[in-house]
Image (cartoon, rainbow, N blue to C red):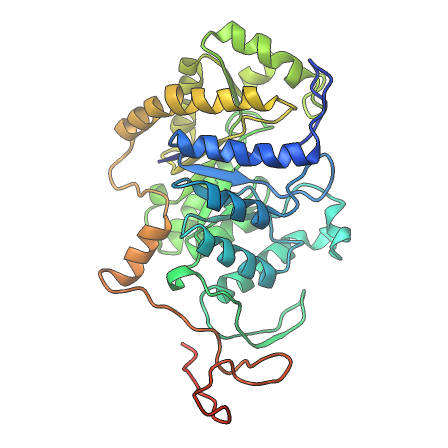
Length: 394
């Protein structure tokens, strides 16, 4: 079971002090969150992608590449990568690059996103959002697994003999999670490929996404990847923790009740009817264990701990309480309750082992036939410049 945090990188005025972080501060503080989570032994740090204020992570590969250099063991991910408005070729190249920089400590969560204006900013039509998601991921899947790709579909120019570079580390693509809370077609695509399915279990009543999770499980089994209860599930969450329950409510209330998404909601009511966990470490533990009861065994639990203009010092304290007081108990309790035969979430190491066993991983070369875009020359030449060395494409 993996436990970690995610951030969407929002900026808002602090309702207590009135101060607003600059974009530079917020980006640096995202890095501090990841470093602290790494130092305290959490498993995953995931970063959202937004192209509109008040959010700053418009370029997750750049931020994650830097985080890879200043962390040691934490797995990096996204929450989510917009597979609709990003070109799949660029996604393949960017995240293969981060995978190399992170020495395999990377997977990817893809999704449509939830911001309507983003689509026309990137020349897309939101009415085609589901079609874009399905087609673009189908291409991304091939770009990471085939050295040479020919492709002609609806939403992008055709590819002929195309090789995305760099190739994935060890010729093993990052594991992909499909993040979706509305669309059975996305759950079906995740199940078809045997990928993970991530339900961001926030901003909705408890267990609101159970029908989609159950559908994904059934389709995962239908497509021959294992039993339904062995499907790879991730859940999102939101928490605010203090050693005393009332202190948690008192400290979090002004941030929650003044944040635009929650304005008009009473904190106690919202925490009671949604997955939001507020209170002592034990209360957060108890609430999270209900997720396992309600959704079945799953592989990844992420919380957002830094939204709603929470000061960085408070967010770092939240990570410490989560990592030292909450997660160790959840590891024991969830493991004890776990049914036999439930797999862990894939990592680069387990995927390499599954593909190669004890053999050395393949080190792929770029497409020798593609040539230089300017001169047309092959990138592989022997000592005689007039002779091109042709390597097989697979």
